Structures are given as C-alpha cells and as structure tokens.
Length: 245
Image (cartoon, rainbow, N blue to C red; front, side, top):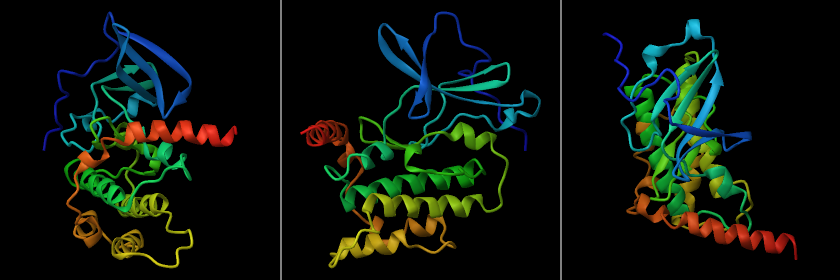
C-alpha cells in the first residue's frame, strides 16, 4: 500500500504573513500561538527530530472528531512544528481545581467514551499507539468536544508492541484520577460502582471491549461538557479566594 500523500495544508516552513508569539515556558505543551487580527488562530507544539529518519509517510490528515489534527506542519532545521487551529481545557487543569470542583461520574463517562473512540481510530486506522497518555493530553474545547492532543509525538515515536494495551490502561488510570477512586468512600451508588469497575479493567481489555462497559452506557453526550469552561473559571476564582483568605 502506497503511503498517503500529504494534504495541501502541509507546509515545510511558516508562510509569509503568519505571526507567531513564542511561549517560554510552554503553556499546556503549547510552545507558540499564532495570532491574526489580534485573535489566536493557531497553537504550535514542537519537538526536536533527526530529519534524515523523519517518518514523513506517517504524517497525514486526521479525520476523527476526538483526535486533534494538524492545520499545518513545519520542518525547520532539526525541529518539527505542529500547528493546530484550536486548543482547550485539559483534564489536568480540571484536576487542579479540587476540592472546589470535580467532574461528575456522568461527565467522566462521556470523556472516557470519547477518548476510547479516539484510541480505536489511532490504533486501527493510523496503526500506531499513542504512548504515555495523561490528563494533560486530553482537551475539552468550548463546544464541549473531547479531543486527544499531541498525536504528532505519537506519529514520530518508535513502535512499541505493548503500546496499545498501555494506552487502554492509561484511560483506566485517568478515570481513577478523575473519579478519585483511591479516596475512601463507604457507600457508592449504582453509577459509582460501575465507574469503579470500569476504572479497574484488566490489562487485557481492548478499547472496543471497554466501549461496551455499562459505565459508558450513559445517554448524555459531549454537549453536557460545554459549561465546563465557565464552571472552571468560577472554581478557579473561588479556589484563589479560599487560598488567600
């Protein structure tokens, strides 16, 4: 099978007229932001690479709602830059708002379901593993859409025979963190017990198998996540007030 052709939105270097502002230190893995007419229109992540061994045949258009794709790709000297047209609130940022704010079991189920759908696409359609998936790699944009970011690093990473199963276990670990399963709770409701069972899935579980778990059979959609940006802003202000009272 011939390697896919790079889309027309790919570029070897920044185009004339593009204005980028670097961030040092990076913000949520973002190293620079592209501005147009005073508004952010692009977010840049990058990493050093050996251009001679760069797997350009793996760089392709991403066509899945739960995987954050590339607007453009720049290759300059020994660096590759991935330009995304949006970013969002990371799960790690939400975790930092505890104990003022934490996600409900339903919201966690919606997020985990979206991430597993993303992994099915990454594992089967792209035929790679994500690798080292954490709460910092999962975004929720202002429309409530859940997206796995950082796929560029996954494309460049060397294949790992255990990588796909570790990706699935990473989702279970993320679920445990969001649900705070480790915290002592004397009594859990029906959804809570299902959530705990989901988070404790065995290493042999696949993404498709976990998508059939009763915990993910919630009728809520990603639309229920739309208020999160406002809620987190309120929680951030309240936490600041409590810490400085």
